[in-house]
Image (cartoon, rainbow, N blue to C red; front, side):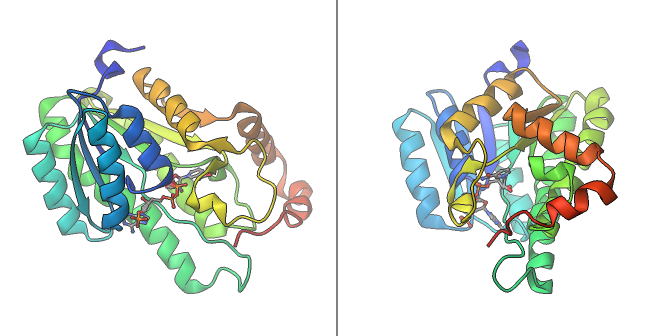
Length: 257
Ligand SMILES: NC(=O)c1ccc[n+]([C@@H]2O[C@H](COP(=O)([O-])OP(=O)(O)OC[C@H]3O[C@@H](n4cnc5c(N)ncnc54)[C@H](OP(=O)(O)O)[C@@H]3O)[C@@H](O)[C@H]2O)c1
């Protein structure tokens, strides 16, 4: 546990309206905590805010698409002025996959935009005030899918690989500025995103448990929070094997809808 990161008081989460983002919001919600939550669906955001308020947190919500760069930056600026940010969790993201009609061009561009540009828009807006205060922690939601391109979800894997590598490099770049960066790489978590999958998901984890693991890792200022470890070990092995050996096997894996 690093005392500086153990109890963030002002936390901003993108994708706070659902799944992992909502579970993280609920996990951090407590008296003396200011939560800023964003997503696109105002009703779902309001429901999460209600839970967090009941736990004693002060909550501000805004329905904003992470691709609306200026609106998002203005809102993040306003939140950082109202309650200077201790922790930013750039979590919003989408997936599709090559099941059904296949991953078409529109899906590919949409996934890369939301999962890469959306994360960049979020982090870039929060960074200047953190740098100025020489304080703050940035968590980037990647995935275990970031370590190898899987034929069932090419754009998703590519988007998560991009933000993983970006976050790892940012961590080194921002150390001198007093800003910490952590990359989060979860395996399968039970959320609306995975609810559509019709294939077995090894070690599928409840979002509350995932939020607990992420919170503990962030309190320790870990560079990478990758879990569960057996799935992490598996993807690292798959990534290390020569493509000629492993490609025929990966092609047989089920496709994501
Ligand atoms: N579930 C898993 O197994 C798993 C594993 C590894 C990584 N992840 C990552 O974890 C993150 C959260 O996913 P989840 O599983 O919790 O899925 P989810 O329940 O579908 O939640 C996705 C969240 O992202 C928001 N979002 C998506 N596109 C957005 C956009 N353009 N602008 C603003 N908000 C947007 C959604 O908001 P609205 O619904 O309000 O639009 C929602 O709050 C994603 O980055 C995902 O890739 C998930």
